[in-house]
Structures are given as structure tokens and as C-alpha cells.
Length: 418
Image 1 (cartoon, rainbow, N blue to C red):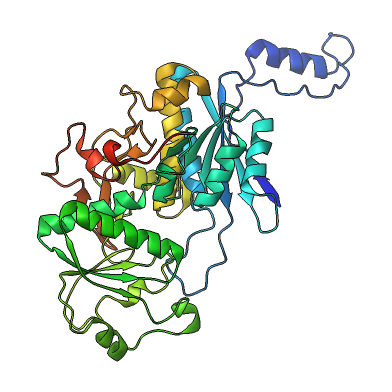
Image 2: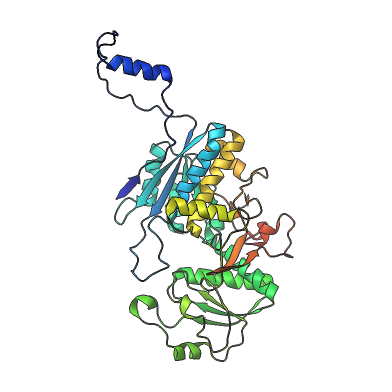
């Protein structure tokens, strides 16, 4: 079922002194002001024309196993949205703009994403942030087409959403798989680790990530010297079907490579590869060394302050999805500040205007690519406890911005908005 959460609002303005005195005098007996006023029903709160409501649609997280230290928290993404609203309202105190959050949780067996989006439209909400997979993003985009609503994709990394399946009303905060693979490829090129052993999992998402790695290898002159499917079966952790050290050594024996790249987006088996290869080789991809938007180890460019604010708000560390939802809400707030209003008909085209930029703790302002509505942004290359590098790497140049060396550039795009 659809579970609306309470809306976040700024506190109501305090009563003025005359109104407060009138209320006291009218209710207090024996003060010479006649009979007390009759009780009345409270008037409905009038709509605030300066308030911008932003909708967040997300799915409930599965109950984690007690031993899974990496399980997603129940409020993943939601906590980022709430911090984004709070930050927008901080700026809004000076610009006389306020922001409120409407949350819609998609529970098993309840209304789908498109229905949730239409319900928000009926409430007058015209900005929708989606922490949903690609099929749900497309369903929402098509359901609200022609309404003037602006959709932000905060979670789906599918390259098709920025290519053949692109939609004019969707802006992508989450990086594409192409961007993630390019960030890793740039680092491997910089380190001169040019030979890749690609290990591909059994899921469709794994296949798509592997295809992005192949494209990046061609783009940056790397060589995939070996490629194997993961043969120990899916759901390895749940079933206990894990490779022994001997099996893993057989799996990697006789190969010539500098870096093993794993394609395991579900996080099912990729963590079993490090330290189990015959030759001492590093591991990257979806596990090991990863390219992402955010990690607790990022502290530069004001990120430490953002990490601390988030921890005070949510009681935990900020995760990539939290950051991506936060950035979507901040994009609305920053654009509305510049334009002195939040009319979607004004904000949507402004997001791809060269005058728009989003400060987001990355050392450079972020912007949207006009040809596929992808947010240009540096990606951090991290291992679990250390920031290793930041992409784009120095020396990778572009005629517009080095940020466009990550992902699909204008000459290669397959996006034709509809």
C-alpha cells in the first residue's frame, strides 16, 4: 500500500503581540471585555504560494540479516532528502522561499510508482525525486508527461535511460554505468595497469556493468586479457555456496592481468575475489576499488561538514543514495533561488542552461548535460577506508569540461528526447 509520511515544514510564524493580547482578554473572565468568544473550528491553513513541495518516491528496504554490516538502512535516500529540504529552507529564510517534502513508500502489493506519481500530481506537486529502478523511472516519466512535472532519477544507473530510452522530463543525478566504468578506466590508465581480467555475475545488471567496462576499455586503450562468468552460482552468501580457496585459485590460474574487475551489482559474490587469486592482484569494479558519488571517507571541499550534519540528522553515515537524493533536492532549491521562483516551466530549461551550477562538495560546480540530462560530476575512486583518487584524472582533457570525459559524450549519444 502507499504509505505517506509526514511532511516537513518550517515552523509557523509566531503570533504578534496585539493578537496575543486579544486572545487572552477575550478568553479571561472578569476583565471587563464582555462574554468570552464562542469556540470556533480552526481555519484551514492557506496554501503558501512561496512554498515548493518536492515528492520523494522510494521502495521499502528488505529486512537485513543480523550479520550483514553493509545492509542498506531503512531510511536510505529518505535521510538525504530531509537534509536537502533543511538546506533549502536555510537558504529560503533569506529569499522568502520555503520547501516541504512529501514521501511515498512503495510497499509490496501496493500502488505502483506511476500511481504514486499521479497521486502527488493531484496534490499539486511538480517535482518528483525517484529512488527507484530504471523500469519504474520510465513508468513515472511517461505517466506525468505533459503535466509540466520535473522528474529526478536519483538511483538508476542504466545507460539506456540516458540513451535510447531517454525522456525529456527526466534529469539524472545518479551517475551512469558508463561514468562509473570510465572513472575506473582513467585511474587504471594513470597507473598503467592496462590488462584487465573481467569477472561477470549472472544477473542482468552484472551484464550491463560488464558492457560498460568493455566500452571504457576501448575508449581508454585498456585490454581485457581474460573474461569469465562467475560459476559458483548466485546468492552465494545466502546459501553458503562460496568458493573455497582452492576453487578460487583454479578460477584465476594461468591468466595475465593487472587488475581483476568484478561485475556484481547485487553485492552477492564480489567480495570473495580479493586475496583469493593465484597471483597478487588488486580488485575493482562493483567491489574492492569502486567509483561512486559519495563515501564516508570523503572529507575535502567541505564534505566533512556535510558528513557531520548528516550524522547529526540521521544518526548514521551518509551513503551514495542519500547524497544523490540530497543533490536532486538542492538542484531545485538552487535553481529556484536564482530564478526567484519555483515554476517548473522556468526551472526545467534553466537546469541545462550554462548559467546553472550546483555546489555539491566536489571541488567544482556541477551541471546538467543538455543532450541527455545527466548531471556532470566528479566521481570518487575509493576503497572501503580510503579515498584513492578522483575522476576525471588530471591530463584527461575535453573541449567543454573535463567532466565530459566521464560517460557518453554528445557525438556518441543515442538520446532523442520524447
